[in-house]
Structures are given as structure tokens and as C-alpha cells.
Length: 286
Image (cartoon, rainbow, N blue to C red; front, side, top):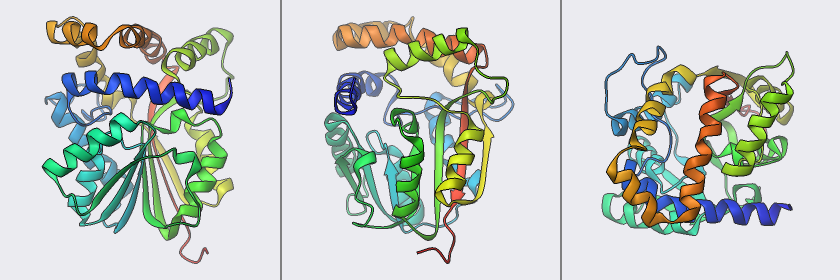
């Protein structure tokens, strides 16, 4: 299947699933943070999702940004948070027109409307020369792009000298040993059912980033920090609110929800991991 067709499937997936996610979990369309020691913090899933944003900023030591790109912004919850925190201009992009419109509605209501712009765009097709950012932020979106090296090169070019790149999301375990056939079969199921283009290991991502020119590169495995969020998610499957919302959402969402069993299986086998990555563009770079 070519890139255009795959992108259409990803777009349709989020167009169809976004109303269900909002119905169940609210505007933050990503995992929640509960502390590096699993189960350490007792909090609601909404607070855990908000805390993920704050913990990413603490971990990366990003203290200020004025012009931010949220690449894969969902409906813009993180974009709005970053705009308020840093008094920054934020461009949020999502491949889903439904998410973009929902995001604009939320921004008009919650603000800051003058600081946040949300557009339906493919991050892989951004113009390298149109505008520059001092922070590129991408949470749980890197998985949907096949050519990780090219995307990192694009992010590097989009950054101003001294700018920051922060990525959080799904990876596969470190290598070596190389992935076994059974592990690859699980990953293939995830790719097919959830439309991920590919997963890489954190050390592979670090290597790709250095090749692109990034410095101060580092990463961390946060899998244990999001374990309670998965437990909350699984328990939600058996609640009436989920079941009624799911059936209203239709067959595609039923199928996608069932496909999450492959993610859960991979996560329990420590094949699929949740990680964070940081890199910066040299101040003297052009």
C-alpha cells in the first residue's frame, strides 16, 4: 500500500475514533503519567494526562519557547497548555480534519485563541523553509511516519538554532538481541490494525537524530510510568459508557478497540515500550 493510501487510512481512523476518545477520556489524546515507579501516584486519568505534559517539560529542562510546532496535536490540548505556559505562539497540526475542527472549537472556548492555530496537515509534508520554531513537540505521532530519518531531518530544518525537539511515544525494545519472529508478528499486527507505519528502538532513534545533526541527544524508558493508565483503559472497556459509546461509533471503532489486544500483549512481553526523546539544534547551526 502506498503512502497516500496509508495516510488516508490513518486520517479515517482518527476521524472516526476521535469522538469516542473525547466521550471517554477528554481532550488529551495521549497516555497519562503516574510516576516512574508503577502505581506510585494516585490520580485521575485526566490529571495523569495533564501531568505527562508537565513531566516532559521537566525531564527535557525546556524552560521557555516562543514559537512551537505541535506535530500530531490531536485536538490541541498540549498546544493550548504550551501556549499558556510559555505565552507562546503554537501551530498544532493533525492529519485528521475532524480533529482539527474539534481542536479549533475547543480553542475558541478555552483559549488562547489568539496564540494557537490548529490545521489539518501531514507533518511529513511541511515546508522546511516556510517558518521556524524553537520547539518541535510530538507526542504519540512519530509512529505513523515510515521514514523516521527523513522526518528527523525535517524537524531539524524546522528548528531555529538552539531549538529543542521533544518526542514521546511508542517504541520496540532495545536491540540486540534482534527481534524474534514471534515478536515481529505481534508488531505486524499492531501495524496492520492500528495503522502504525513502524516502531523503532530508542537507541535507533538516538542514532538517527545524531545523523540528522541533533546534539545533547538523550532518551528514557517511561513504560512503568504509564502502566496505571493502561489499567484504567482496560477497565473502561467493561463500563456501560464505553460500550454505548463504542456501538454508537460503529464497526471501525469496534474493530480498532479489539485490535488493542496486540498492543497490550506486546507491552506485557516488554516488546512494546513507551519512551521519551530529546535533542537540540546547535546554536551556531544555520
